[in-house]
Image (cartoon, rainbow, N blue to C red):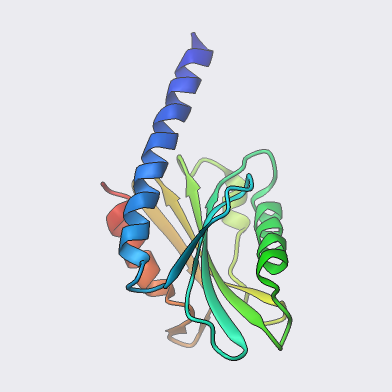
Length: 167
């Protein structure tokens, strides 16, 4: 009986997540980003890509939280996959990345250990982490900033997620 409840909960979460991603894509493309890539590699579901500039690019990755690994390992794995797929090169071709982590609720203590990058010391710079919870209907955003300035449209993404997570 408990297995059936768990599978029903997972199916409900999957349906909610797909509806959420469809609404998010409609709001992000073409207003904030130009392209969307479906990845579905087990960790990353979608990547929104902005216009390429000479040496920098802006992207958003939508990620399903995987409780089998710690949250920090998930983020490092995402950084590595984005670097490999989009050919990020430190200093020469950096990618500013916003990561949207989809969770059913905020019950995992390792989510508290996540942080955006303070310094641009990688080819993939995590400029913002946005943890969206469907059950809690809330968003936790962690953005890298310099004084009052945030990078990579972090505040706009946070506002948009806060509106969409309450559907």
